[in-house]
Length: 266
Length: 84
Image (cartoon, rainbow over all chains, first blue to last red; front, side, top):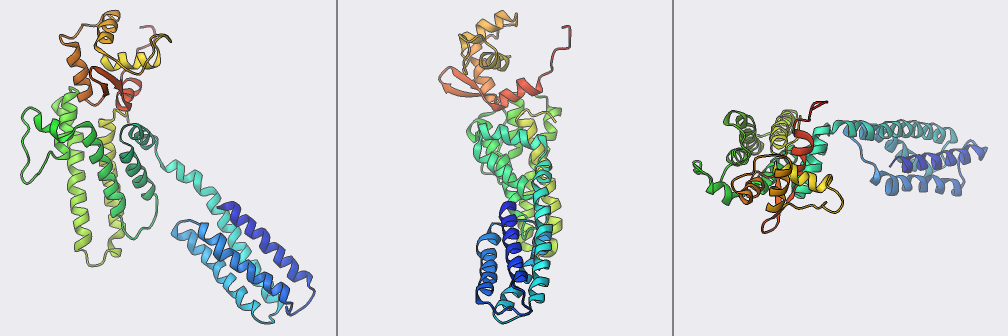
């Protein structure tokens, strides 16, 4: 992405040099005005679609886009060269600042994926690839500052845990276990029962199984409540920040459960 | 212990013995070699280890250490103290 932006800045400089080199106060040359229009077209058709960034970065980019639209407007008449130079300068400065920010971003984003999450993803990739993808997607989505809805990462986290539990403890096996009893209104074993089944098979004591069992139970309860609450809230956007913190809590519970189930030390 | 044997077979065994699977014969051979108590039913040990989520079944009686079993041996088991 950065290389595309830099190439565009280079082309913008070329246009500015050409306009300045014309040595006139008012730009009437059809060739140069056509060049300005092509420059604007290139941005909106080739450069802009490939740009991704967070809300703040894209907001900064809007200043450059307003400038480019102004350039297009200037190119439709015999406008002053000084106006072109002023707008080109603003567009350039905004794009250079944007380039600096996005160039630094990948490293900082990578750092946000903890070593534990990397190990969880690597283990799941070999064990249940679809669960690995769900977990990876949720962790990536949670790095965003703003989203219209947080249901996606919440359900991805639940699915990552559910699929892992289904793989390690199929319903039939859990149902055959000693003392198994369906919980009220449940059609099959709950996540909590599956966690207990797996850890008992590993010989983990009752005391030690309680933490991951509770975490799995909390995931079920929280996501059930979370998804329902989105339907019942009249103004979802007002509650978005709260929703993110709820999903972060779910992530912590899923992480605790997965670390225990996948034998990942924390 | 079955996971340790499977890990040894896949990672550290001499070239001619190295493989990604474990059977009852391996349990008997390597438990004895390590002076570890033989289980009453070695075949059941492999079934139980699969049930605990550490093995995947390849064919009947033959199992493979999966990534959870690998994590258990490589990352979660206590390491020997120097000099022991």
